[in-house]
Length: 261
Image 1 (tube, rainbow, N blue to C red):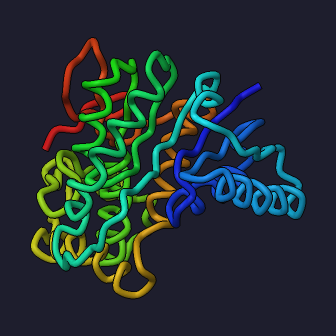
Image 2 (cartoon, rainbow, N blue to C red):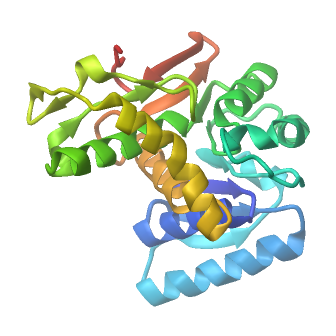
């Protein structure tokens, strides 16, 4: 039985859980939150989704102890803070979210599965969790999401199908991300990338979404889904993720191949 856990029942946790149930990604989805009531309510709502779309995923509320037997744990917790940032929005939660991650690390001591980090600033929280937990595989979804946005934006600018674009964004998630222009191709051929336009869109898109609906949620959920498909061996391919392993140390790499800027 394949079991995945979602830690956090906020907007992103709800969206990620919805995506996992809709996609039939696992057999059991364990939902945890700050309160038992939140976890139970989300599990019930997801169970309605399961029934309506005939999904194989059975959502259940759980506690931190019930995460230990899951193959993967998705962390989408968020500390309580007011986000007044209009630029580099991901950094707004650094001070508030770090203590939450430290507490979660202590509760998950000895976990040997895969952790997928969504909490912002995602690259810093990924590193924090990995370095103090000793967990063997900790992935951050930042580069995955940035790469998806890059390919979509370039496809629209060049008026080509998105599947024709092969390109990557690596490094720090957000405004300081590195766009790998020299290795970007369209239909296998090198292409001139309008870098200023692309970087402006990558920088402005999260703020535009947050201004309209409060925060980004569906994009991160999609990045979680695509990452877990690879982690659980349900798909072949590569995704750009921030990866920390005990063997390799802190570095940025694709799931199965390195991207060179």
